Amino acid sequence: MKTESISRTALVTGGTGAIGAAISRQLAQAGHRVIAVCLPADRPQAEAVQSGWQAEGLDIALASFDASDFDDTAASILRLEARFDAIDILVNCAGITRDAPLRRMTPEQWQAVLRVNLDSVFNTSRQVADGMAQRGWGRIVNISSVNGQRGQFGQTNYSASKAGVHGFTMALALEVARKGVTVNTVAPGYIDSPMISAVPDAIRADILAGIPAGRYGQPADVAAAVAFLCSEAAAYITGAQLPVNGGLYLSA
Image (tube, rainbow, N blue to C red; front, top):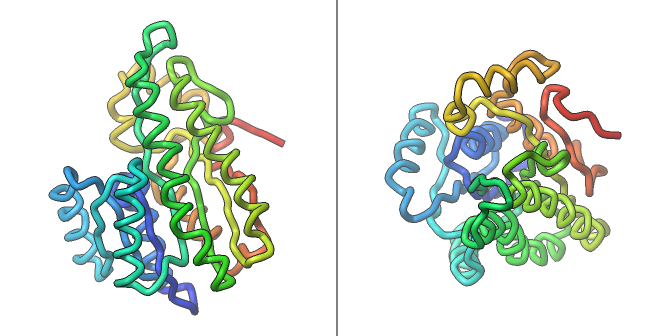
């Protein structure tokens, strides 16, 4: 059911993954034109996800480019803006993990995570923020993580990248606040997804026991928070970090 009276064009990086697909779906259901971004190598799997959307009556476009590469991102967004006129909503959901204790972490593991999780936020935002400001309306939502707030053993790369995401959010929010553009962060906790399913059962049980809500989050929980921040109702919220973690980590 459509809940927005104004249709905007939304670009979602990582838009066919577990959380990204839920965000793409939620924004499409709100009446927006949605472009879900995947890596070129992941196009076949993305097309299968797209077929599922089509079966639901949702017309979500696919775009294939590497958001961690500045030049590829710039050229791809330029083509998309020519096709869709403008990008009004940007959701940065692309992310990877390469876990290891720092003493065993390689430079390649560090750099790969920072490129995908943090550089991609710069690469995409750099292309669309000026246009949003010139038009006097825009929404940028960056997906961080509870582990960017509290840290996590074996994730110095991931935690640093996700903490950096919110630092980026706060700084950019100040730059564009007077232009009708909001920039916010959503920080999910442990979400029921292939990533958490790959964790050994004993560790999964320990994680679940530590979540006050008594359950893992669902991708739809994150998507609902993103959709709200992208709405007209959230026009006076900017530079904020919205936790979606079931009470796992409480911050003032």
